[in-house]
Image (cartoon, rainbow, N blue to C red; front, side, top):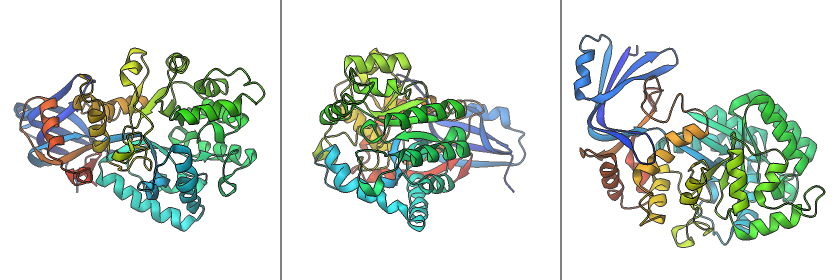
Length: 427
């Protein structure tokens, strides 16, 4: 029988903003059991234990000075692309055609999909990822299998591909609309309307997706301004379509079909024009920044460029961090955090405190789940990672700097996760 209370001890870091995190070198988390799992009763220094001296039915989880952070959230990843992480990345469009789309076609097979969902779920747990926005394949069961296996707050959608796609992944407009409606009604808020990107999705299918979003209050996700040749291709396609002859920018296409808004997450946004930024700000559309997938090719990325997060902040555009598996080579959000800091070396705003915030609480805010997860605030779910690293420094930035220095290879970030805890229970 589970205890009513759990006391967790360690070096505890709780994000607040880009500039600030609470850090307790001899920290204590008090967890209280509810019908749906454990929640945070209190976070503080060791002295708060005085308030809980008389507890009965209590378990103490003492991790010494090991670092404890909230469960990580991945704002943009393709679970069906796990097998193409190490494929050659000449450029985005060639990579899709030569590697990604053939890999996704395998998910037509239900048994294959179920098997891959189980193994991928274990990879998420080992990397401490307990939620995020996720892309499936065109197949309905790529969504069903993921929802069945993934543990945490995941929002998942099947990609829509009704034009400019290989025959083996091409949907009719009727098929695409039917699938969106069926899955959105089944999963409601957890479903994500997911045009792969504008050049593969007819405008009336995107408009239909917008109407379904309004009915179910689900999320919308797609890709935007990842590479310059992609932008040129997209605009050349839509300027020949009725009603889009005068389209001004990539974002303008999505705006005209009703896909932008506070429930929308656009992947990448590396080559945003002033017009794009204006539209994103006005519509309150969020951007998922994926530093590891857009990194230089010698860092195993696509070499697409660097997201201008300083300009995004200036324009008040919401953004968070994502792994973008499989263009991203590693599932670990810790690897993503380190890449974000390293790629912006010399920028005083690119700190590990900021990176942690953008991989936890900020992503929770964008996903509209920050009332439950993202930090260690009162009554939030007890979702956290215990790291294989001991440190008793007093500032969050100092602890995190030492932590990231301790990892010698990128593969080592998975080994850095000692325990992944969801709703107070070790996974």
